[in-house]
Image (cartoon, rainbow, N blue to C red):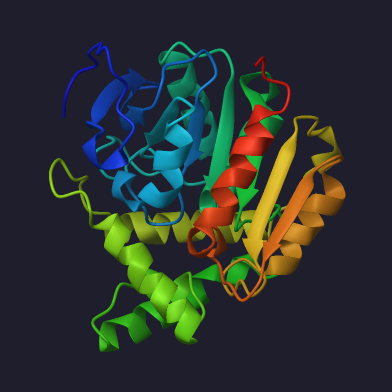
Length: 291
């Protein structure tokens, strides 16, 4: 793990971004950053049982051409220290502490799956920290079907094990020719980084996060009308993990939000359709920025 150093040329390839660490809230958080430095970076919040290596460079790299990008391991995940958080709300508080430790007063958030739940809790608990919000493959507290994520996860992990495949090929993508091809390409991109890879996620982390998601799914619905930040919501039209109807629910309940539903795509629709998702993100982030 390397220390923060100033360089004349910003790193714009996630494969080459060094892993760094910073102390906040009694935790040493592992993170990576790339792209041109700015006062308002884009902080990426990752999915269930994922570490720094689980972000798709086909999404991160083109965004980092224009924006300061930061990825982070949750507490107790990958190279971050401490015990994994027991609730989504605790994860949100950790992310708030991490952002403040880096010296940022405001950030944009790009989140996926569990990360989208953390992002919702973050913007509701710490609204002053968030300028813009991107929620993908996720759903609201109390959302119908979210508490079934564990069952879907273990079922697809078993299917993947029988075929000696990455579980994400089953969890994130449809099992038709298009989905299988997108899955192979996605997993291939995740393996582009060969040095300074993160510490593998443990079964303990998986179980802890599944319990947090179950609690989120069975929790009381939040008042999403309190979210005033510009919000972009995206998902595939056949999300088996966090049902697509929950993205539509988020869109109805967050005033002024934008919704993109990708055709013939599952939970990982933003990765399958990265060539159209990334331009949509860049347009969304550009609104209101000085030229």
